[in-house]
Length: 485
Ligand SMILES: Cc1ncc(COP(=O)(O)O)c(C=O)c1O
Image (cartoon, rainbow, N blue to C red; front, side, top):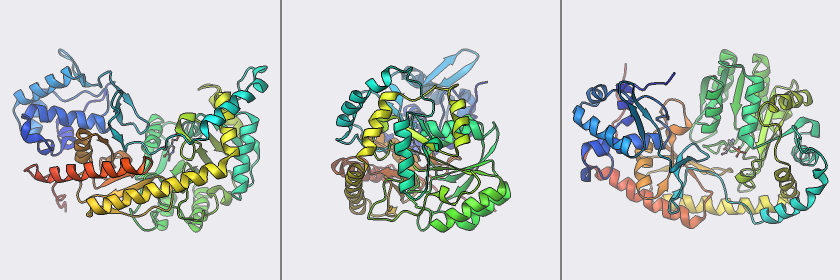
């Protein structure tokens, strides 16, 4: 069944659509169409949903029906809406758009766009030599069928070794190689969560994890993270696990995406205890564990405190090495790995052997590659923070001690409006609401520092200009939330 968005819901999503920058130059219908495109672009209005009838939306927005009719016509012409007489109108995207890794919509041919929607680095220089060396290794595998549902043994050994070196003794039987961390999460959810099961997540959290949970029709509860300070509130987090007893909790303890927080050892230990007592499986996403900055010391891995196979760790190559490799993994008990492998053959059988061999070569060179990444990220983070302090001094950032993102507190609940306006000046943003469930987080913006410093400084300059335009747009851009008693 197609889902439908009602007039008042769309009106709420559209917010101050009539006050967007550039508004004075365009008629009402064009501004409305642009605002709907903006909602589609930042993922807040899904594809394939039925929009309200023209009259209903006109009433909700208190504008004339002719304006809505003209806006819908324009959306049809630009390929954002499909209509059938008597059946209504559905959202869609024109053929020149594709999905970027964060779920934002990226035009295929726009090379001038500075993309701050994606928090991932370009490949390191060592990638090409690793790929050549992997091709040399390939003949060793060619006499077999090439299917390795848990991964090739060399890579499982290398990943197990990296856990052992972090103080968590791990055997290759406890590792399953996947096609990226996202794939690892999806497989774990298939195994550990029945449709409709309860899941606790941080808010804000990684949007594609929310997408994976939505696909399992999970019942989600959230633990709100503070933007600054420790991030997690230990009592609230443990209390909500005890009270709601979710089947599973998905957490990112190392340099959390998007806030950059690092969970303290003490909370890790208490968390594992509380999870066990509540019958909750803990899925810890260690995507950023290799990227502490400023010499920050890492607490022990969360699974160190696990005595009952409650903790499933997932991680991968995308953040320290390259997202294009599509190599990730799960660390769990050996029987859990066997069950995951059995589930996996119904999905994709196995990961590509050649890519796994590339990963083996990169991991053999890990200290040098990771040290260079850390130096690069530190310089880029500092350039971004410096540019923000100079050009947008009212925005507040807590300096993250690792990872790749700044969770920026804006000077008003303008994140989506800013993202729409920024697109016009060639900067793509992932606005705050993308990292939550309910359209909140408008006061926040995730800014990755994965692009070269010059691009980051240029992007901040453009954002400062757009921010200034939002103020000049004549009408108020936001209202203080009304008090509801
Ligand atoms: C927390 C987190 N988990 C998972 C992923 C997806 O990683 P992969 O590219 O390995 O699938 C990302 C990528 O941004 C991430 O930030």
